Image (cartoon, rainbow, N blue to C red; front, side, top):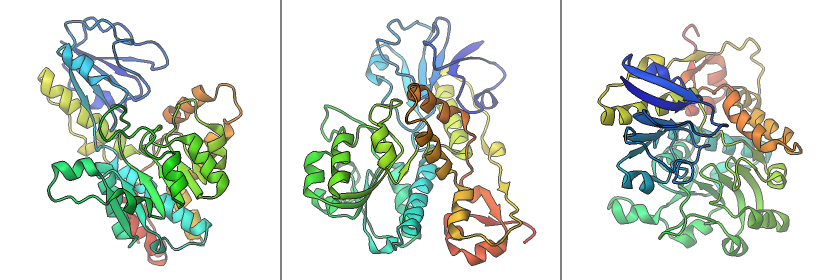
Length: 373
């Protein structure tokens, strides 16, 4: 019988695995258990996987997977050099993060009384998530530029904006992996020099902590060259920067990509990939992707209140601010990520047609009418 060891927080993992797989789970706050006898390990982003955390690789281990879009917590070369395949679930939460970005822009425009169509958004990173953000911006007629020089070298059809064109944008949103010491390194991509030479209405980071120099960003907020920031990922996560969290327009505990649908897709993708190595076929996710109807009796809602009811971003923000002064804030940060129920993506939500007719924004987000309205 094939044996898989997995983080206990990998969403509904057992439902994707066939009966012939023996699944054992572990708590990611504890050291990684012995891998002796296991054919595969499935981890989450909170667990570093490298020669220090796994100094001895058993012969039984054939694959390592992370049920997440990013894989910078894994030293892939180390494992590949030892004959272990490494997989991620890249693209699993692109839709979810795209919805987070457009939700941020809607809330920012309402709270600050701004028209987002008057501002140009610089999208840094044109992979799965950046491309989804592009779709959302197009749906809402928000001007944008795409910046991804490495993609321009490998995809003839893609033309990246220049660095200066991006730095001239009013809003920046990041969708790149965290890389250091390589050509096109993204570590501290937005640094003191770039911030001193430009000004921005809004900066959003839902990619990886470390892509922005947080100290330089705080200085830019103090001088006014950056007016607002939205931060979902943090440079020293989970020990997040409390000063930045308090000064941000919105702060969230690395949950931009958390949704019921995104987590199911991630589990399905990683099971498919590991199954290709171990020789099993995973169960499909289709039957688990259900919709949620919300029958709101009070139809006297504002757009702001409706958005905040459909997306718990304000609750995420309150959660992280509430733990800023706690000495155990790093531990609590992790608990926020694992304990809060996942939200539903907009196309999986149904509302009274009266509300959709009144607020066209909801239709653009993909919200569907209730079956009986």
